Length: 370
Image (cartoon, rainbow, N blue to C red; front, side):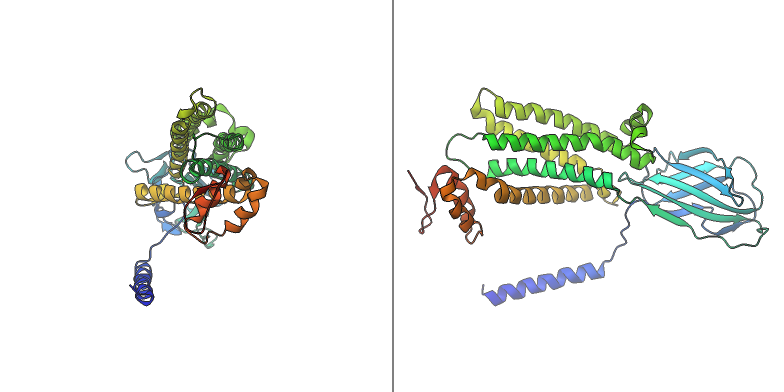
């Protein structure tokens, strides 16, 4: 197939994909949003409702929700039995305690989306004719905006796990030594540094999530009642406990890989470590935005593949650019930087094997340097 034939084929494929994307637009909103409400926004009722009911586009979590009613003077009317509908987890509802007087009212609601992010808003409505004949305000919906603490903790988690996975990937599948497989001292330091960073970020993520969902301070987030509710009644809590178990197993396996008496088993333990680290990332994908998708299983798998690919790719680039050169003898560093542009498909293993005192001749065959 000629160059122009290949170009034409990929051109038609690109046009087809673009046509599909344009022809099948879809609405995509982050977090839960309201699809129906009783009373509806700005609705004028002839008599007071007995129940206030709000239906969302997705399941909302069974904790850290709220539903209140405020009259036109600013006083709160407490609702009875505020709950998630047992037969439909999309619905938040509460009973109105007694007959409400005519006037304007505002429903204030708060819920936690499937992805663990809180949303809140207001729904105004009117009973009878308003005494001041004033106009109702617009309904509101406010989603969660990540704050500095979440950005830092999430960043530490992804940096630590990315370095951890990429180190193992690099050692297991890219840097293939000719002799016995083992961790170098530098590899051990990077392994435990990345592991410690992941553990720290994971531990901090629990109180962080409590501050987000319950809207409390960090000090309050450490209270037993909030911790218990988060661990036992939220999807994040279940995922967090699984991550902690995986991190403990990762410590045991990592210790066996590096300090075990049988060095020939080090590679097997390293493979197990890689699988456990990948599992932590897989569990993480179950608590993100993909959980709110109409096809959550497919969305979660795709989210995991995205996170995994990005972690290994970026982490390996960091190792190649900033860590690998320190393991190459000073006299051969110039060769490394000359060949780092990857002009040939066989170039990557060529400069990696320089640590094993190998060179890459012009004919494409390996030869040992004594």
